[in-house]
Image (cartoon, rainbow, N blue to C red; front, side, top):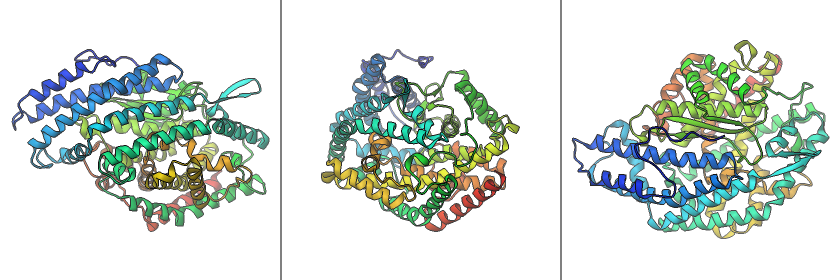
Length: 573
């Protein structure tokens, strides 16, 4: 599949030629700036940014749709090498001009106060010498996608990629699951040295970027680069500690129930995903069309406007949902800001996990649609901690409508199983999130040691033993300690993972509200999404009906709610 070209462009674009963009920037720079024309000036700059951002999104999306397509890869690299550096420089020049003109961040109104603060922060971080380093990092990220997107194994004469192997972990036959798990791990371990080498290059570049900007380490740089105005690295570590105290024991109870239900002496890695009951694995759909129609039916019950958004994406060809060989790993929702549309990419194979991914990414898409109404591109840049509230809340808000009674995917009993799997998954996810986040705190505050892959393995292993209690990895030490290779965020977007944990706490509060007033919770959720990036995190959480808190009392309340609901669903099942 391919994306349609950018519609109604004000000028032709070419990924090999920055000059046409530079001419537009020069025109904006040469325009006189005063109180009468400031908003028109911002509008012209914003429109230009929308064109470039969409152009970059398209080249990236196309490269992930088929990592083996040399032409698509080259178009992405052309953008990274020829357009992005000029974009960074030209945008910096306009930021400096605006910041010199505007005396206070409040001067342009409440909806621009936070975007102005972010702009000021980014202008302070800018270093010319970091531009080529960021270009190189983007190219290395593309290498990770190529390496991992090409992983596939022979299975009884049929070639299966990672997602197809993953679906076999749901098989009732334990021998099949073990075989599929071993095949998957063999693929990853076969790339171990290559991934270690790739990561080392990334570490060196990130360390240099931080030092060029005057920071002692990349963690300090990253927190500022992500505009994390509302919490610190120490707050993240306190969140990890609260998870260890409150959530890890709850996750261990989930694993122990699974062990007893399966009737095994110990729970092994290939036992974690399978349903412990006697029923076959949940298989909600077959093929992209069925996933689209069933999801649309669900969204029509959640909210008619949200359903219309999703239908628009289907009509415009902005969904690529099935897995296939050569497709990059993962799933994401990208923004096409010129045409004011989102795009969803995922690797569906007909499992319940795929349905959850669909609901998750649709939440991101709805966030984009709601915030596209804001006048300037910078106002649509919501903090990632709240972007994930949008996605994770949608998983929970859609849960009541999974059944066939709503033209969803499941019988009542199957829907109960699906909701149990989802809620248990939340309890298991938060400790895993703490491992991923904790690993990156260790890596980027110990750069000298972190360049040794064995030290990285040891750090990951220590965190795994601390947070992931309940599954026996005995005999699979290499597979356990190299688990950081299998988390693409560690390679692509370091420190972008705490957002998922914070957002999960926010989403659970939205769900708690929905248990007593579903329609009211959805309306509040939509109103919060419409704020885009115009409010700080505590205000965005509050607008959605949640508190920006990650302490032990908050986690205790939410874990109790989850475990109470799980008991109720188990009775229904």
